[in-house]
Amino acid sequence: MVVGSVLNSCVTEVSSPSTTTPVGYDNTLVECLNVDASDATLEVLTWNIEHFPKHNETAGFVNATISESDYDLWGVQEIEGISSLKQVPQVNPDYSVLIDNDIAKGVNNNYHLAYVYNNQRLEVLERQILSAGDFESYYFPRRPLLAKFLNKINEQTFYVINIHLKCCNYKPSDKERREEASKRLQKYIDSNLSNERVIVLGDFNEEIYPASSSSFNNFIEDSGNYAFSTTDQAESENSLDKSYPNWGPIGSHIDHILMTNEWFNQFQKSYTLSLDQCSKYFDAKVSDHRPVMTVFRN
Image 1 (cartoon, rainbow, N blue to C red):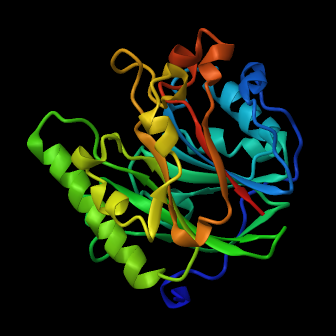
Image 2: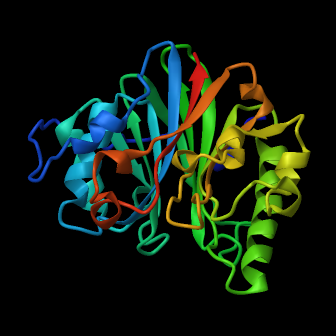
């Protein structure tokens, strides 16, 4: 199903002709990127970079890690310093940055959503902030960022929706808001993107296991059309598989990648990148979340 009529078709990629390394560049975490990139695969990641940049060294760590990863697409959340993230192309001009604020000024306040993508392998065809209709702010406190990409390697197109849902369980309404957001998101995809390759990634702020108690059970039960590529990590009892390591005895897995059935034959494997194993300062200087990656065959 084509949705071009509601999306912006003209996109200017954010990149820099400069190759000047920003002050503070630090590739300490690169050693923990233990999955190799390849033209034979599409690497898609989600990462909540807590209050980015929360420390004066944060941007140096993050920009080096992304720019040296050679991974295709990073969906990131909780971006407060837009200009700091836009330094990535200065380090590696093969990367471009798309931030929600590039589409609608002032959207999402200080918790911006963004994509950092390899412009040699991916091209943005369309982009949109999902804010109208069912995407009211009560259920989506951060308005989702949708982008349509062209994979230049295999000429496939696909959509990605970057989300950061309501956190916590302080009140019963917190979970109710995530449950309703999940239903509205599924309704949108079913109605507008039913024949497209779609990925939903981000900080869901809740586990998907056990499925019966998850706010996202509507997707889990519709297994013919949807699957969480991160199910193995969610069910794992290995603390290194968890995206949010500071919760409970083994951590919590609240950052997910959801795929539609058009991806099923290309899905290869998902990983949690335990970057904190490369630096004892990761939590203090970088983030309280680990990146989560799904690899698809091209």
